[in-house]
Length: 295
Image (tube, rainbow, N blue to C red; front, side, top):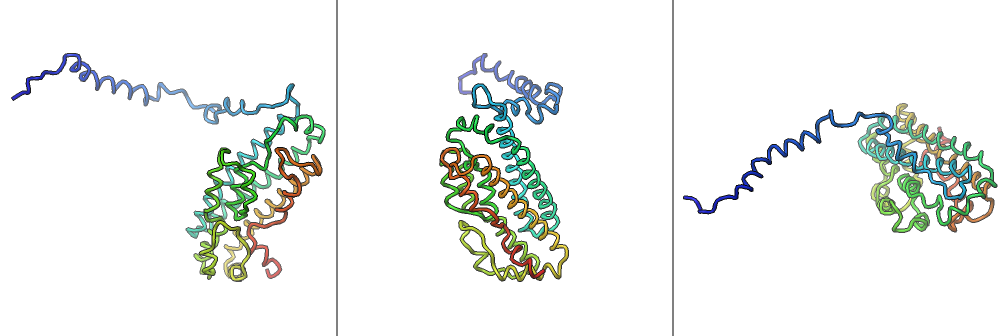
């Protein structure tokens, strides 16, 4: 027996049209014939990318374009390095030797590219940089969140690095999260254990907010693997190659800054050359360097 309340003819008509309407929307959204063809330009979003170089000087100083493009390119490579090292962390913990070897070959090559870019930047004279330096105002390379992320990811954690990244900076939350994450070196300990190494308990349970450092027991285990597992020695040498490349880049960067601005403070009040020199020749993989005289 019905309730006595009949549905409005208009509502009935709307409901009858609903399947057809929904079908039409589905057709419009998913029909590949209605999608623009994929091209080189729209796959890479080139139109947007090529509008992101905006010199601040007026009229624009010629070399400011180079300065912007070099630093934007650095940030893209930093992004790729972070991407590769996240994979390396997984490879290490899974004991995937050849996966780690493959990725360290890539990171080593990226570091060579980063060093090579300094050659390009050095074609800009100190007077050319001075012509637009004041336009940088409070902006400084010390504020590169991705480079600080890379340092933290590789085990070089230091409170002073956070001081140059204000909480409202884009990516500041990511950097803060890195402080409490296990580093690439911590995951390397996992890899050593998959190869039968005895890693001290205090290292496995260490305070990960602190920087990594050398350990004599780890060095003994690495020496054993060098002698007994030739395939591991390939990985260890690639890790050393990357580490050397990072130190080379730091040195070249310091000398670039020194020859360009000398003893001046950096833009935005950053400490400039003295601060950069603090990290010179500081290795990532301390234990690999500590055993060189015993190989």
